[in-house]
Image 1 (cartoon, rainbow, N blue to C red):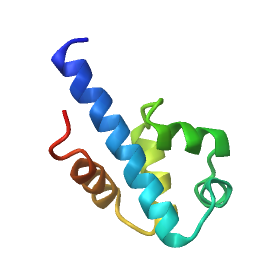
Image 2: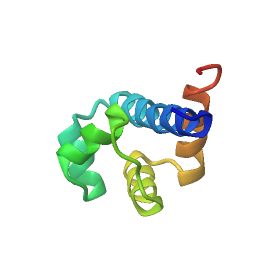
Image 3: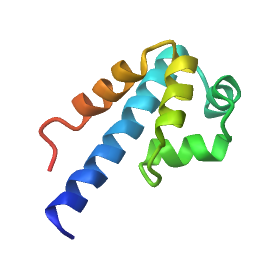
Image 4: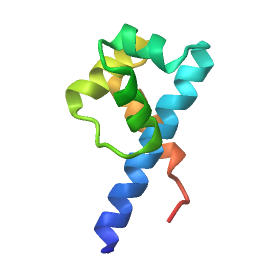
Amino acid sequence: MSTSNGIACALVGSFGRAVRQLREAQGWSQERLAENSNLNRSYIGEIERGVVVASLLTVEKLATALKVTPAALLEQGGKQGAGRP
């Protein structure tokens, strides 16, 4: 795996962990977040596990549902990955 692929994988995983953390802070299930963001529940799970790359539109939908700005959601994901290979 190249360095850029490793960084991309870490970023995707960090973003997913941030989504999970914010969802759990709301006391929501994946199903509830899916309903509030107009996304599929299984897609939410894939995002949280870091197996898919969320589009900018998806980031906006998640941020709106979680009552944060898209920038704050992305920043939270960046903090989750700080110090990770």
